[in-house]
Amino acid sequence: MKRLVFALPFCAFAQAASADSCVIERQAYAPAANLEEIDVELLGRATRSIDMAAYVLTSVPIVEALDAAAERGVAIRLYRDGRDARMPARLAQAYNRLAARLNVEIRYKGDPQPFMHLKAYAVDGAFVRDGAGNFTHSGLRKQDNSLIALKCESAVARFSKAFEAMWVR
Image (cartoon, rainbow, N blue to C red; front, top):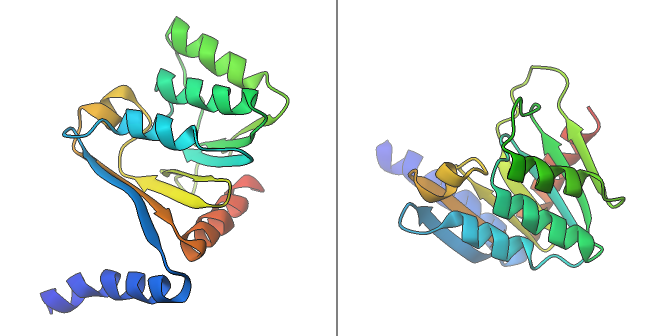
């Protein structure tokens, strides 16, 4: 039974892979890898759009990468679970600069249920990044966490559908 349960996720992935040839763009594990640097690099690839769902977003390099993308003309939609009560000055400056851009929309989840705990984004509809760690310095560099970026039409479509459902709540 344990083997069957373990194999089921791989069967589902294999089915999706055969339908639209999914490719792992990046896969890494902190703390051995610096996931923050990988996220900055992945966000730097954006040319048209970034849709991000972030339970916690306190990583200054990631906020700055989003701001740099917005400065390049990338449309950014950022969906957050709740407001950060206090921000250090450098983070507040970067976040306020990002929020002031015309091509950036930031929405906060109003209803406390269901709990929004995603740490994921799609770039240009080309790939989706998902992972366990919050977008924080410690979550991406010091804790045992994972990151996977998939170039996969079906995975991007599933994330986009879930993101749209959250966005319109």
